[in-house]
Length: 295
Image (cartoon, rainbow, N blue to C red; front, side, top):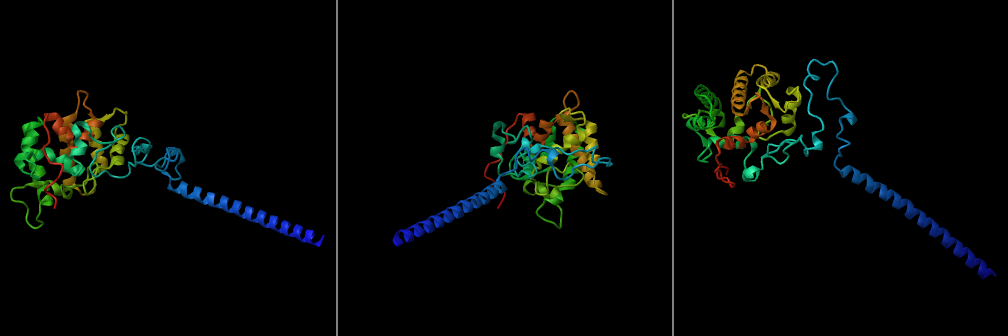
């Protein structure tokens, strides 16, 4: 009888310990699962629901503000373009064209050139990385610009940008040449700000152009839309940048405006990566994929 009672107590104790261990394992398992779930949620990218402007916990516009409501930024770009707030080193991308210019393998061929450098390649026909004033004159002539604009643009571009893109900082280049690999040094103010200081393309800022200045949702900009854009982006006392921005917009409008007087969004995008220059002249770029001008 005593042995039986002792055996019963031992079994009860064992059962109690087993239940306690099971409870600990169960509770510990729940805690571990909760921890794993929390870590997984932190690692997951934002979903489209998180990108909804109605769910933002901060304001992007102030009602009654003098400037903000008239110049809204593009919202929801993340739903159609991956991480639009991050600049692209070698692509000009939009919601409609998230992989850049893929026609004739443009993006693949020029992956080792910044977007700003790609913008300049048409004016470097011998692919030596140096743009002479005669190269710019020839390129603008091929694109069909009027003579007065060709001369004016060539003079302004080479006198204004040559020194900044040259290898020497003390004396300017006596021939007013431009170096393609250093064109980012010629980045000026009072422009669209789509190119950053190193020559990358900023998708969000490009999209903002159309929400701010294409008021009728035309899918493009009129000449006066572009002038309002330059006026809105001007920098205090930046007369050189304002002049350069005006010349650039004038050249752009002359080149791509359609019969309705609109510069369409896709054509503007291709102006940034320079692919449209080759399309307009039915020519092919001969710059090598493997560069020899960067050491």
